[in-house]
Amino acid sequence: MRMNNLSRIENLLEIYYLPLFHFAERLCGSPTRAMLLTQRTFKVALDRSQNLPVPTNVRAWLFSLLFHKFLESRPRFHRA
Image (cartoon, rainbow, N blue to C red; front, side, top):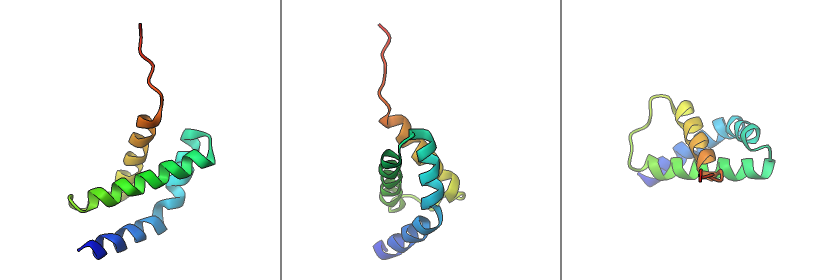
């Protein structure tokens, strides 16, 4: 089961890494931060793929994960 998930993630990496990286780079403005954000996205995808069924639209799911990771990484400003 674990190997099946790994091969599935490898396929997703091959197909979606560059589009996700370019999206992250536009969001972050930094290739280094984009690379880290993209890697974190795939780590979450790997962790969640063991407990969840495969989403119907994997591409949208990955982009959504990346965007949420981006929002989590931004500093939060609190109003006084």
